[in-house]
Length: 103
Image: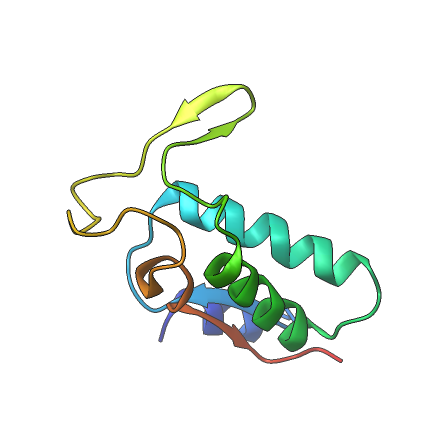
């Protein structure tokens, strides 16, 4: 049983989990977008995750080597295939799933 399901067994109504090891810079960008959409009040958790994934796909500003907190953050090249250069690649957005919805 994965960590997301463990959280739910302890009372969490919903969790976001990844299906494989994910790069920190891509995760940060996706989660920032997810909470931006969720906070707007226009989207359910499922829709907010979907919109965040779509944003990574279509936003050409999302290149690897982003700045976070004023520091340049490079992807973990041990985990990222060399052919991947921007966050629109499925490696960055596809592994995230919502377990439960907690409506």
